[in-house]
Length: 137
Image (cartoon, rainbow, N blue to C red; front, top):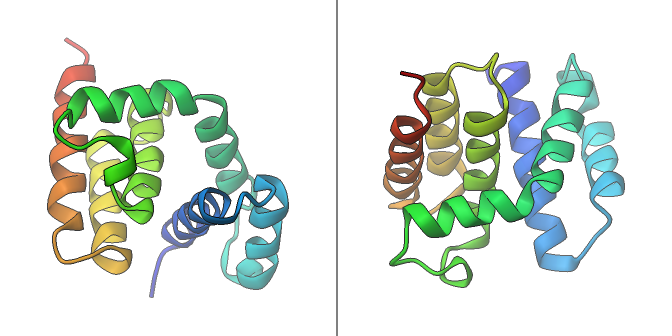
């Protein structure tokens, strides 16, 4: 069974995917998904915080993807992989209380569950590279 935080991350990725696909309102989409799966997510503030952080830092997160995977323009990365990367990069860069290896493991698991056969390798490569870049000396 998925942990509460894992399910919360799935909901955030689904929200990002939905707003990129259909230009839905981010908060309405998140609240709808939380309502649908709400009884399984203990801390509803966790996915709200993640989504807000991703949206507030979207430009910098996109720049990190481009910088780390220059051979993959943003529009060539699948929407689901891009959503997973946005979540992972946000956690790596802005969430100090989440250990980087937890972030990468969660993102790789999401990519295995939601992406194609190679998504988890791509996500792992991008996030591992960024983790080493942002490691504190």
